[in-house]
Length: 258
Image (cartoon, rainbow, N blue to C red; front, side, top):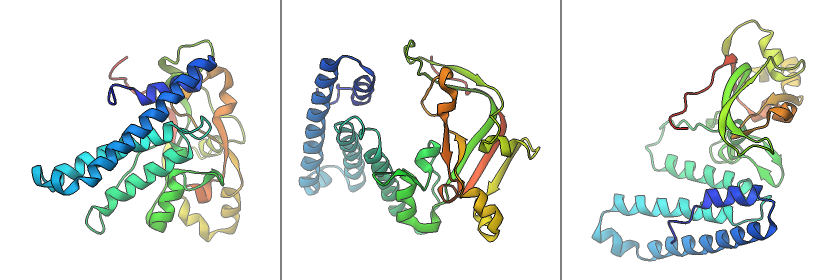
């Protein structure tokens, strides 16, 4: 029963259901799952020596790390809805990345692909630092945060329209509005390019522009075509990002499954 309970699906349903009883029941199950996963992690840790002898150091460590991630998912998901899938999740992601890096030889380079808000070295608020904020704390300037954005084109996301069933579909948007980061980047006249924002620290005028909040396109798992403005988030390009990749036009990824 521990592994048949779909935590992510249950958390998503709890977020979106309008039935308070169903939400309360799901949250109770999430709290129960958290307790069981933590118990499993503790059991493995207490029996490390015995299980290592019966298998191997590498195999035991792999199993324990899987249990740790499951425990983190259960822990984050069992929090109040305004916390679940938020600050605790970002911290755990950063912690797991640090653990992977620490296990590699000194000097190993690691690439992490995630949504702009996760890789950002900033924070939504004092109570919600992003994953990149923690990685910057762990690794200092060795952590290089790269943001991605585009001016116009198509992409895929789950339909967040209240009348939809959150199905995966293609969306197409026109050129970004005047004053947005994308609008400025499109005016350069180069279709696709990369900007190293760390170099901007040498120029006071450029630094002032980059540290002034400007709307940046932020589209994640969900998108509501009726509320396009909500997906432009005021952002200080620095210090949130060290570099920025810009595409004038994007095209939808080819889904493997529908």
